Length: 339
Ligand code: NAD
Ligand code: 89V
Image (cartoon, rainbow, N blue to C red; front, side, top):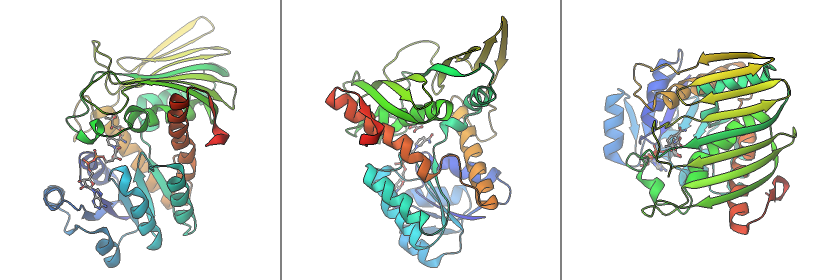
């Protein structure tokens, strides 16, 4: 599979490493409107075709899929450009600026018959995956309560300065992943109630969000996120889980410890992710998930299968982001059919 990548920034470096690890996948062209970043990345990964203009790259063609690794404002024009050229698309989260754009992008790619997958990678982190598989396998019976929690004081702003500048921060950037994990565990959501706070005075958006979800499966879940939590040990970037089911409980605790209790038995597993040879701690958890989700994309394209985090699927996760902001602003619960 020949791939072109757009956006040679902070996170794309992980995506480029991961593509190199996937058999049969090759990045043949890269694009960034910032010439210095383009030159540095194309040299580091020895990619001969380089462009500062995505239109020019598509005009020359020669690739089957495009990996859009830019920030959100450029997603709609780039996804629509890709649709006009009939290639498969993998696009970073947050997928869109608003629901109308998200729906338009899904429709544009659907009309071509090609695959659109959102790079929603947190559900692909191997510790989270172990919990999802245990739950789906019936390890604790039928779940009725869940908590999906991400609380940290890690400085994300030095690597991603734009995160300090936007009107929206934690729900759009990080909460989106944590809400997606809740969907992967408990299914789609019918109603959400959210509160937000800004604790760090140096940033513009909210850095604390607490969300109460009602799922169609009748599970109640709490999704809580914070980048204002000063504690030791620092758990960035771990998502912690606490799930009650009709037959037992499941916990994913700090240090990647998965505990399943059922019928008097207590099974504890170390589900630490591997540190890939290009990865570095503490990002190794996220970096491994990049490899796993990109492998999933390649597998789905080859088999003609819809990816787990397809554009269509992500309308639900992105819809939760929109609903959470509406709930926090209007100080009321929001039904998902309002979004
Ligand atoms: P970044 O600002 O470091 O990099 C984005 C790059 O895209 C820049 O170099 C910019 O010049 C380029 N770009 C923007 N618009 C362009 C266009 N129209 N044509 C060509 N180049 C263009 O951003 P980042 O931190 O790498 O984040 C990129 C995306 O990845 C964001 O949407 C972010 O939310 C996401 N992200 C995801 C994860 C994850 O775990 N899934 C982690 C970090 C970031
Ligand atoms: O995954 C992300 O989107 C990142 C981070 C983990 C720092 O929030 O921006």
